[in-house]
Image 1 (cartoon, one colour):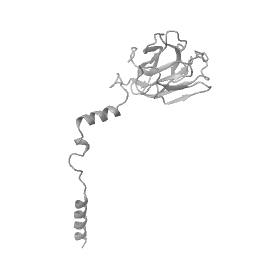
Image 2: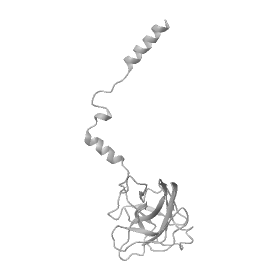
Image 3: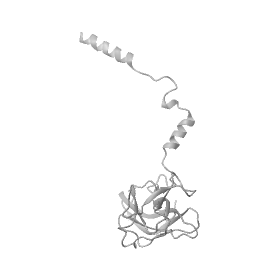
Image 4: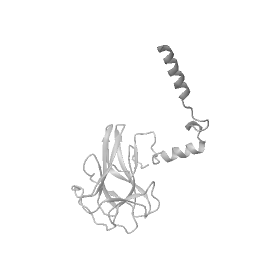
Length: 200
């Protein structure tokens, strides 16, 4: 009797098994649709693909701080940015924050850095400042306070890369990049941490 019941169960399972209609499986998707799906799911373009270097859209920050009434916000009013927009610090007043030695009261953007290879790393930022701008600097640092130098933007009214003078010896693991306000109105589109002194 038990043998008969087992045969009935197997026959029932086989009869109830489901096979999708031909042509509706993921493997049967048109080549163009599959390519479009892959493009939509892809991360922002990274010219250092395949290496431990990191290129991050400024708006893809891990967290931020806003100690006063000025903070970093996502904007799209200037053309030429990549991805969804760029980050601007407060209003375009040019007002400066504290000196590099005391940034506790400065608005900050913080990025997690999953470093996979030991090495000496450089910090790069893609920025813009107009020809008469006083919103052309920011502080930066990895795993601690700001570097002795500031990131100084060229007043060209064009998006361009700037590289910090300080380098960082990093071991594999999670690290943290912080971009602090120096002048309100500063605009940043992309941040990068690479082993090359040349920007992406």
